[in-house]
Length: 278
Image 1 (cartoon, rainbow, N blue to C red):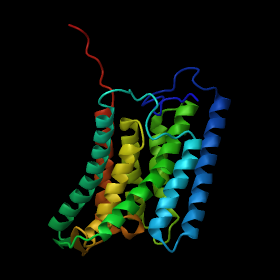
Image 2: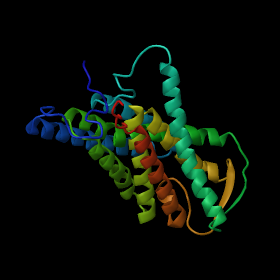
Image 3: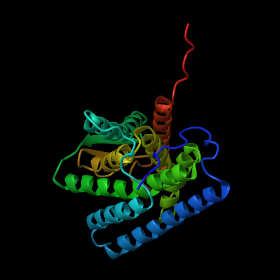
């Protein structure tokens, strides 16, 4: 089965004749159906396995992979060059994503500590952090295949600019959290900004590996990592966490940090104009 590149119509206008208007509408409708259908299936899985958060996350990741693959989502762009150095390139993308997710947490924590919004003490690492990391990875796989992979795959098939996919993916991350009880404007903004970073990494890394790494890194560190597993942080004004637990100034600050990192990734990955030959 032939596949279009994941980043079709990258950063600009769609190519003439790439998709007729009717065909484009059909592809967008199919993408929306896959998105809504998978989201509903994941809600059912979460409800059935609600007694075990780790099992629910792992099962959700498996279901998301199976369904998203049918929707045309691939972990790596099929046009990715084979040969020597391929594994190293993929490893660098994973490392970049994980580093950016961690950087957003550390920047927020550092500024919060300087401004008196939080106090930081040494944590007590334990084996439980390993389970927290495993769950964060599973949740990242589930969410990024659903909220980043499907929008970009749909945009590629419809022949529309990836700028729309970036905006939709960011808003979808926020909307997914917006249905949860206890959501605040700051936690919504944080989720949307994390989605923007994931979308930027998808566009630059040509696949879901880097977005998954960024999402998992941020979730694990902002969650269990700051609650005693690595550092023991006491929040005085607001809180930085994953999901609806984030609120107040630290959440807004983290959203700004993630948005800035997303902009830097997009800028670094943008094609540079060629200089005329002398």
